[in-house]
Length: 387
Ligand SMILES: Cc1ncc(COP(=O)(O)O)c(C=O)c1O
Image (cartoon, rainbow, N blue to C red; front, side, top):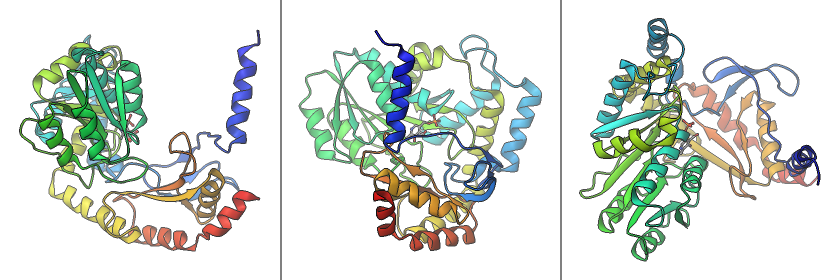
């Protein structure tokens, strides 16, 4: 027998030796301009291209003010799970607004988007029966979807990325009575987009539920409207809406199912009134004329970096860990913080910079980034990686 602590230390060494060691970094400041406390030469002023605050709403004065009012009214925490005494009027208001935004009968707020995926997949599979349900999942789906499927202990067909024929084959050839197709609408590390309308048509034809995770759908795709498709929308309050939390928007019976059976809704404290109020204010701004202006600015920034790219997530794929880390370090030397993304977040050999653009960036921030990316000598980076 050997102490587990030794295995823990050995595991950590393996991760570090593989160039995959991670540690949290202290960033002091809100918005895209901040001080990286533990920069290579001490505290460093940076513009970061690293958050999912795509419209900059986390810093919007009305969003911040709404959170403050909720803090003053209700205090810091919800104090209990939503089904016990953790439900405030602001939760109802936000759920009504989220349902209207998605065009569904109802919506339910979860503590995070991660919890929303865990809850919705688990509840749908439990309702269908885990031996009687097939889940069809794109190979690049977000970890919270993968974990939801694993926790549900259900049969899964993992389909090649964006391969509609493979989804159709899995659905048509299934032996189970029920099927759930689940996909990111925008893939979080590649910034590409699922064919959501085709998937909805396929699900309607082959009698499957479509679970669409719209966590990153700020510039589209629009939700599909297809007769006969049982559509369940999952999203997060933590990215475009600048707050913290997740949601599911769906028909009333599906939301009732979640309230009654989704473990990640039932067995956790309700999201804080301040986070909830902030998200509600953000939904209102997002759907106003100001929201159009912010999206247009974001669209312009994306076009400046990669013309025509459909989303604000722009991957710059470099290969191995060392190449991605060297590129991130070269940008940081110029005061630009762009994260290097490595396994297990992305498959080995596809390490990358993940550029995340925001309406909060200024045009000259984006111009600096473009110049810096153009100046990266990827041959040198590969050589650094080999050194
Ligand atoms: C596609 C996708 N779904 C769900 C989540 C989880 O959302 P949250 O950060 O609110 O837990 C994320 C991001 O983290 C995501 O990228």
